[in-house]
Length: 319
Ligand code: A3P
Image (cartoon, rainbow, N blue to C red):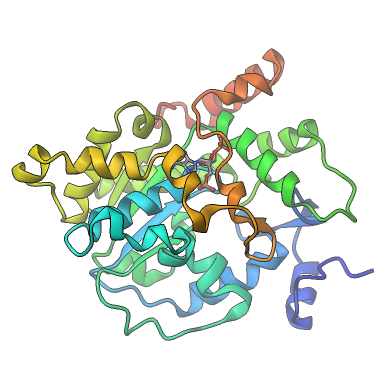
């Protein structure tokens, strides 16, 4: 039986067989590639990205773990950068899916080993990746391109991940329970994780080089969206000027990119598949902080809290 029907190349099928593997959340298996976990169908894209992407100083790279609010960050960054070029009413976000406007490098641009010529894209090019900091292509680290990292508390990320993957899991595979996924999450076996290593890689780099990496959290974005948008705009080199503040531009972008507004836009409605698996509408579920309380028992919450304390304790990162 073919373990990886989505993987075309025989060479990659063979390579996957050589890697440590665990039960997958989405597919039958996930694989440990170097020091992070990845689905078989995504690995060819990860490797092509690592080998071929040439960063430019003017690039903006958005980095996240899956289900951290990537879609939201993409819409906000796109709107901040393009606000002088088009009004929100005329924003391409109204007609084109945000994941096409700000594509994933690993999971779209280089998916299946493609290697397109990206050199003609006008600056600033904005891309997204889930690859952990140490495994990013060298040119991202050696140029002055900017990285925005969006982190989300692992309790809500876990619940969001579980919904997202089980919704897209092929029907011919046996369902995977919340408890089984939780065990793997706590052991670090979730896409592009362990989650703590992913957080720490970008966190440490943001402390060392705050001009290079801006570290944001989903929770801060929910609590004070305006302040976080200002930080973002400053960091990206597109600061809001006094007049714009007076005209309420920040509020307008914030509202336009809100969960309720984005979810209603035509290109984000059901019927379109991304990456062969995910319906566009599944990127919009609840969009809340604290939904984990509806899914995790007190003992599960205790257990995850211990993992977080043990792995992140002393790092200065408080989630
Ligand atoms: P929930 O499943 O908790 O609702 P990603 O974009 O990285 O895949 O993350 C998806 C998560 O972000 C989902 O979380 C989704 O609902 C939430 N989300 C999507 N768009 C959002 C927005 N505009 N504002 C806030 N949260 C959003």
